[in-house]
Length: 332
Image 1: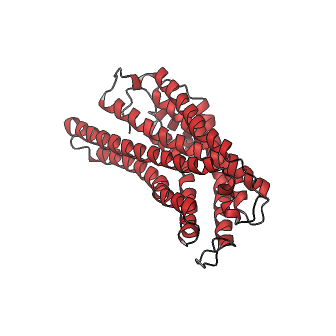
Image 2: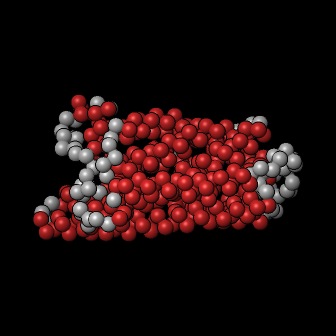
Image 3: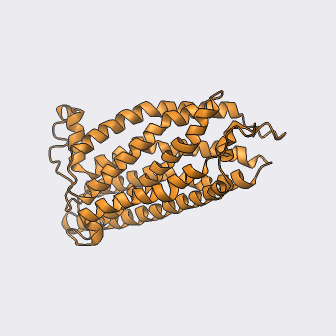
């Protein structure tokens, strides 16, 4: 059932859905928190000498911010939860969750461009390869997202959440003013544009990187098939993580928003809500998978990670040649 106001039996058990989604976020929270605290500690001890390291550190902040919203998101889904906590989640916690997600997607696109320019134009003097520019750009993006996305949503989600007795699953929409409902649609479109733009940038960047690296192997070590396979696997892993985590959610997000705003009396909305909730949780698992990017793309991070976890004692030669992430580093 979608709610108490509709007689339609859509075959959706809201209580079971809520408990399942809540359990998934609670299960994800502890490993995500421990992993991201470790990653944050390592990042603090790495100097920001390259544009890649600047973007990596901002990505760590975004992942940690998203992780901290998991308990409130999980608790707000539980049946019987107070309206006050659910209203707090709608107005603040969920909003910062999406802020972190959008920032992560943008940073992954910037990291891909950074790798592209360092492979194709090593030692280049383009503006986007300037260290100071990368620092300013990262801060500006945070400020733009907060001012154009986060704050307007918080401000327009200000209606009395007790004004009627409709289904709790729709409380977030009930808290929005008329302008807030319109802005909600704009924000969803904006987030979709961010994702698909970053997706195109990442795919094109790594296609070019792969081509460049394979050509380099052919010219210098044509018989090194293992090296070529390693390069392709690294590209494949990064694209796989990005597409599996984010693509399903952004495919279903726009249809769900249309149903959420316009479709009040059919089974489309409750069914899409189940799919949206599951794909959103899948997107949140990216906070546990982003460290793969740091590990495979940055030798300095890989070395510090292994030293921290004492992996070098088990595999002494694994990170022996690790070096800082320099502008000439051509690892994928």
